[in-house]
Length: 160
Image (cartoon, rainbow, N blue to C red; front, top):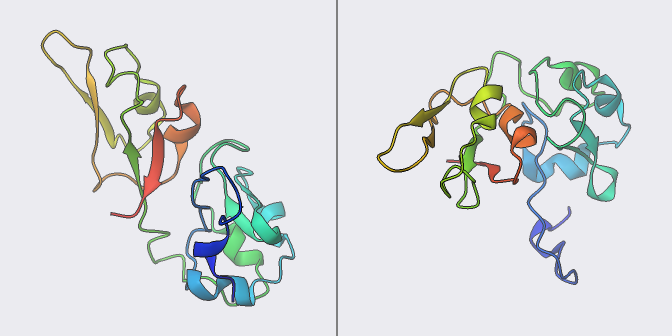
């Protein structure tokens, strides 16, 4: 079993945690059972599943179409029983906007809200400021469409 807490010990860069696949049963045992066959990478309709560290598949919203369409093809083609049923929630992650957001720094931008199909990102009007983004964690599906559209990489996925 790979100890992910030690993976970046000798690197200087702080890397964002790798996003695992939707509907994954157990992230802690994923590296023990994944064959790294790339069937899920090839089957991904939006091409956001890529090879990550050690050749294990990860979701990278900066590749392909930049969002997960929740097509379930990654789970359908997997030869191992790594995934929950499609009727389950794909993951518990939601988008979060950090302080580098240009709208939070009083520069007009609504690119994330324009890409949000579920309309989880809204903008509240402010006195003497541009409209400020707000994310409804209840409405956010964690699809990642907002991540690739952000011009300053101010959005990340978190587990609430």
